[in-house]
Structures are given as C-alpha cells and as structure tokens.
Image: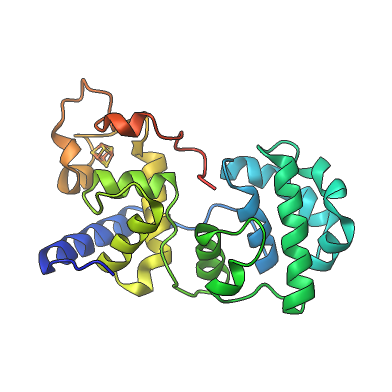
Length: 240
Ligand code: SF4
C-alpha cells in the first residue's frame, strides 16, 4: 500500500465527510435483488451506462431467475435480451459462462472472495469489488471506474491513470469501512458536478475546497482541466 502523510489522510477524510453530507443517498445505481443479479448487471455494465443496463435487466432477470437458468440456457438465448448493450454477444457469453461456473464450482452461490470471483469470465477487479461491497458488505477494495479515476486525479488523490494504482492510493487514504461507499460518492459527484466534458468548477463548494481546478476561470470548459482527461472515455460509460 502506498504511504500517505497525515496531512493527505486528513484532507481525504474531510473530503469524505463533505461528500457524505452532499450525497447522503449515494448508492449503487444498478438495480438488482440477488447477488447473482448484481454480478450479471455489473458484467453487462462494462462500456455501458447503468441506465441502459437497468432497462435491459428486468426482462433478463425474469427470463433467467437463477444462475442455473443462465447456465442451462446458453449464450444464444441470453443474447436477444442484452442486444441493446455494447458488446452484447461477448457479454452474453460472459454471463452464461460465469453463471455456469457459479453452478459447477460454487454450488450455485456467488463466491465471496476476490480470488474466486476473478476466476469467472467477464469479472475483473472492478466488477468483483462491486459485488463484494454491495452484495455482501465486504470491503476488499475501491471500485475505480472512469468517474472515480477522473475525480481522484482532479482532486489530487492520485497521480496515476492505471486503475489498479488509483485503487491502491484510495485504499491508503480512506478508511476501509468506507471503501464501497467512497466509490458511490465519487461517482455521484462525477455524474452531477464533475463531468468529463464540463463540471461545476468554481461554483461548487466541494470543488472549491478540494479541487485545484476550481480556481480555473468559468470561461474554461468546466472540468476541462486536464487535456488528457478530454481524451478519456465518456463519463457515462463504465470502463469494463
Ligand atoms: S472543480 Fe471542476 S474539475 Fe474539480 S472536481 Fe469540481 S467540477 Fe471537477
């Protein structure tokens, strides 16, 4: 874990308190009821919006109520229900194979460890963190999607682009009990204030207190600071 100074940690805690006050209802915006539904929805959310996933999943969850239903169906029967999403063919295959593995190797239950989750097709560390944190309340890491990465850099919480390194910086700065909530808070601020193509720089109290970009003239496209950030994927899409 990277070493952080007491000042960096104190600043991060102040930011956390401010975000909690601003977004008391911050939560995972994917809709699900059972852990396997969250796993499926998160696999589907790669490079797609939560809104788009939430439009597709009611019919999908109805057609395949259990992991065994996906496993026995095969990708061809899943595909028509996820066709509105990017990379639907590959995602249908990931959903099928991951649910097959859940049935074959984990007794039909979504596994509760990072190592086990990472063995499933379509599951990388970000997806595993979403499932562990939201379905099981296990704080194994911080979900780093495009919003979290962008906010973390703009607010001086990391200098890295690599999501794995961003995650380690955030884990070093924030209390473990808040790792899951932290990503929701940053995503909420990213969607409402600090959008990749323009934010509320200089007009937002949290931005003014915590972001070096807040002093930039409002004539500049808000949130525009980093040239490199403009070339990043659009904020409304997940990074995989
Ligand atoms: S000041 Fe601008 S760049 Fe910084 S967090 Fe706020 S909206 Fe984003």
